[in-house]
Amino acid sequence: MNKKDLFDQIVKKKSYLCVGLDTDIKKIPSSLQKEKDPLFEFNKRIIDATEKYCVAYKPNIAFYEALGAKGWESLQKTLEYIPSHIFTIADAKRGDIGNTSTLYARAFFETMNFDSVTVAPYMGEDSVKPFLEFKNKWVILLALTSNTGSKDFQNLKIDGEDLFMKVIKTSKQWGNASQLMYVVGATQASMLGRIRKEVPEHFFLVPGVGAQGGDLEAVSKEGMNKECGLLVNASRSIIYASSENDFADKAAAEAKNIQKEMETYLNKYMK
Image (tube, rainbow, N blue to C red; front, side, top):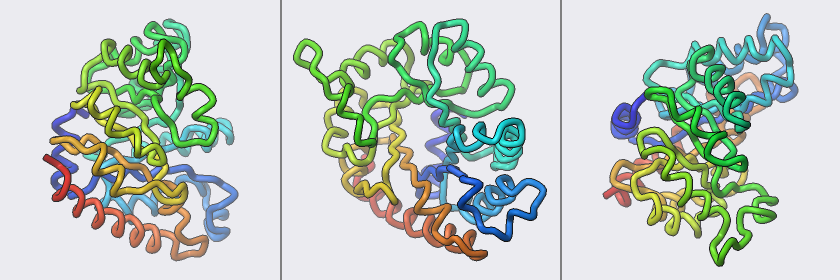
């Protein structure tokens, strides 16, 4: 999916919501456990309930690979079920030496046909470049994350500059704004303005809204650009809005609430 296609969906749906499919086999309703593929059945119902309110889905690969071959099968079926106009993110956080990264890229872009994959930048340019060689595919590079331990390294000063800013300034030379996004956690909203000035045209994937307590308005105000430039992810607050058989209805209601709030901010902050 190219940048125009993604922006068109944002405008059409008045939403920049990404639904995280962090589907834990231990948390889905017990009534689904009798299904042949409980994970896929849960995801299918979540997608049916939320697809009108979101522009992206982000399966966290760990929840699937932990189940071995069956988990990978559930993931592939989920990916194939997602409507083709919706952006897909493999939250895999890969990144290795060049030939290995090439194989990771082929796995997620060719074999599985995701639109994008999250990549860790720690090993540098040659570990990221192979992911950037695929047409209409995206690298979503970890920059400033929302977890507690992010400060252990990301805020270290290198020649007087935060490491996360060094990552952004260096990596923006590797690819353009039509193939490279950045992960910026919603709990880091105070930093979003600084980052936006450095990369004015790039999209940000923003996790941490919902169960993690990120402020959607602050994120929107600081991070939005003329093409919105944001994919804001909510996972647990949507897919686990209920642990009962009404989970899909409750997920739809939560996604709708977020979408309505996003519509307000698109009108207010997108310039």
